[in-house]
Image (cartoon, rainbow, N blue to C red):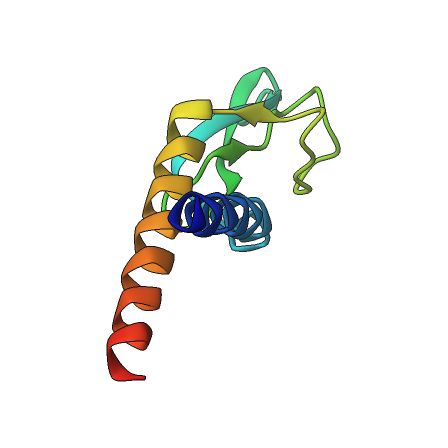
Length: 106
């Protein structure tokens, strides 16, 4: 029971860290259409690097035309659960390995 409690706490911390990692935002290299008023005749599509959040794997992508441009929000933008699960797994592995290293030293 004691190790199950520790693992549960580590999982909760990993989920919290993955959710907080959405603040690590970057743009590109993926490009999406933001409007159709580009080019010399203002009738071509406008492409722009998409804003994405999450670390180390981006899991929240800005949805142009649906949400506020250049702002990420969970209810409005494209959420990729597999990428989020990878972030949670990596955070969990880091927490478990870190706690084992610390417990061996003390």
